[in-house]
Every structure is written in structure tokens, then in C-alpha cells.
Image 1 (cartoon, rainbow, N blue to C red):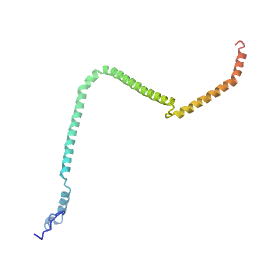
Image 2 (cartoon, rainbow, N blue to C red):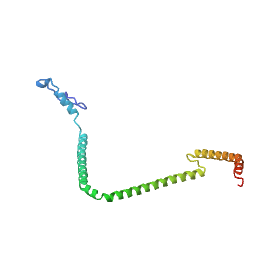
Image 3 (cartoon, rainbow, N blue to C red):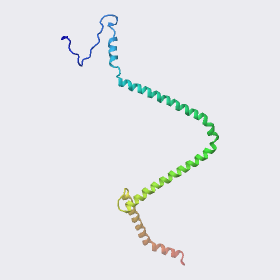
Image 4 (tube, rainbow, N blue to C red):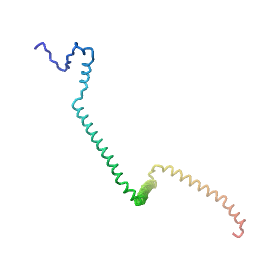
Length: 168
């Protein structure tokens, strides 16, 4: 008994046969490799769960497609018969929904503009206010140039009008 050493942490190898018909073939090493890759219980439960849930989803897919096809078969005549009602109702609903969404969009845009204008008037410099200031100065400069031009050449045009119509 003292001759036997404890086998802690070491893996025992199964005895191999060196004689016989299969001594030159790789069958023992193939079986050994196959036994090394056997899944543990957690992997086996996960694989079974995958197979079962996949089967359930495949069954539900088949039932859904069957229900859709049967629904089309049964309800197509009803839809064709009542289509003179559905087309105008659909048109009215489309126009009503489009109008409602447009009004909501314009309302949001108006609120955003009013908020920006309030911040601009208060002097909080919202985004884009520098462009508005630049455009306002350009318009003011152009207006002053037009005013100066009108003062300079206004008398000339006034005299020409009096020449063309002496009674005016």
C-alpha cells in the first residue's frame, strides 16, 4: 500500500491495447478526443433550452402564417364588397391626420420661434442672433443710402414732373 502514491490532480489514462487487429488504427485516440469534448450538464441544459424554444417559435410562426392566409381568404370578399365605403373613409382619415400633424408641426415651429424671439429681445443672444444683427445693419445701411439718393435726386425728378405736366 505504501507503493501506491495518491493521484491528486492527475488524470488517469485508460489502458491501451498494443496487440490485436486495431493496434495500428487511431480508434483509441479518436474516442479519447471525443470524450474530452463531451458537453457538461450546463451546456446540455442550454442546448436543450435552445432546441425547445426554437421549436416553439417555429410552431408559432407556422400558426401565424396560417392565420394570416386564412384571414385573407375569408375577409377578402368582405373588403372587396365594402371598398366603396373604405376608400372615402380612408381618404378623409388621411386628410384629417395629415392636417392634424401639420397643425402640430406649425405649432411647435411657432413656439420655437417665439422662444427664440423672446431671448433675442431680452438680449440673451440665442443661436443665429449675430446673423440677424448683421442683416439688420445691412438693411439699415441700404435704407440710408436709398434715402440719401432720394434726397439728392428727388428734386431733379420733381422738376421733371413739373416740366411734363405744368399744371401739376
